[in-house]
Image 1 (spheres, rainbow, N blue to C red):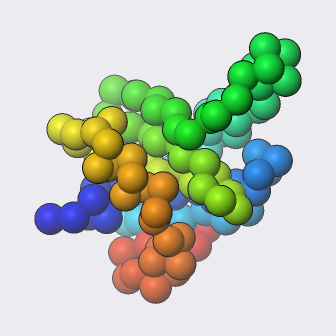
Image 2 (image 1 turned 135 degrees about the vertical axis):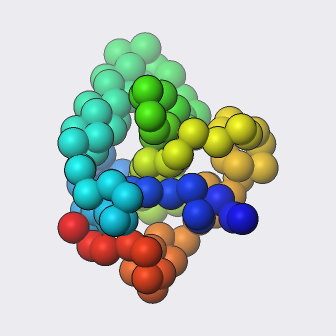
Length: 114
């Protein structure tokens, strides 16, 4: 089983934190979690400018049933909604997300553009 099997939703944001694309699965068609991600990216921007913090790489937001992970990639932010997984913040998992090609979502039969 790959990490891809644990993804139940995805959202792509530009580097300004504005949403570009959304993907759902039959398991989760509710996109309300994207608002939380949008707010987290806004908070990141505020903290980086106010406190002059550098080097944002990822953030994790844990819910009761799901986990959302946001990573900064070279040209965008990618947020993935996941079933809880054992190694959610392991180095190998974060590296996998940072290298994740979002075109995979467009080509995979489980995902639908929303």
